[in-house]
Amino acid sequence: MTDLLSHNEPLPDERSDDRSDIATGTASSVQGEPCNELRGAAHHAWRLAEPRAKAQAALEIGRQLASASLLIDAARGFDDELRPGRPSMPRLVHPRDVPNRGAGTPAGRAALLHAIAHIEFNAIDLALDAVWRFPGMPSDWYLDWASVASEEAAHFSLLADELERRGHRYGDFDAHDGLWEMAMKTRDDPLARMALVPRLMEARGLDVTPIIRGKLEQAGDVQACAILDIILRDEVGHVAIGNHWYGVLCRRQGLEPEGAWDALARRYCASAPKAPFNLEARLRAGFTQAELLAWQSAQASAGPADA
Ligand SMILES: [Fe+2]
Ligand SMILES: [Fe+2]
Figure (cartoon, helix red, strand yellow):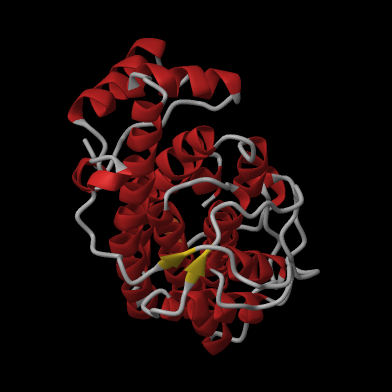
């Protein structure tokens, strides 16, 4: 799973979703306390360290999205905090030092599920971070990323439950911090965040998940396969949201999306996505044939050393 971590939409006011029940304005919330203001609630959940508590808080935010009493204070500013609440375990190590995750043994499959649980735990924080960190975005931005946070929490909970059925718990295996490092590099720029987190790192999951699922199926691990099916289904939607907002922000800034992506990847020292791609899933998630072909050709012309 280390490879998972190593790596023409309408403008917001043109979207047809009827979200007229969501009020915008200033809520009388206190920073750090749960409240009915979406960004404050996201910040509160982001700061929770206990994994199940964070997941529950994100799930509760998801439930509140349907509530007419939910407020969004898009103008509110927060301190520039770098680290979300995290438990003392798992220990974070260099990617080369993470444990063996072969699918052929129960221990290897537990390590594999733990690695995916760690990605999902990070993904809760990444989506919550998008909600609270960036002021002045359209309401749909906050609603989209809040719904993603809730789905990531559901993914994490499924995996944490499954680990417990197998005699383990989240925190039992060492993990690494690649996803969060890119989140922090892009914390000042929502365009860079969209380009390099959902469109690069999260989209990598679309390519890798079916390969992992195949190994688990070969090992007869029906439960793990069922969880990965749910994750892959939802992740197409998350990457589609990332692609949508990447397009919106490019248009706002008058940028051509493919050229802008290359420039951002250079600026933030990110590598281009590596083929082979899950083309069907990536196309459903909003990538274009042209950009997927361009990445494939660039990789082919770079030769095997870079492949
Ligand atoms: Fe997920
Ligand atoms: Fe996701």
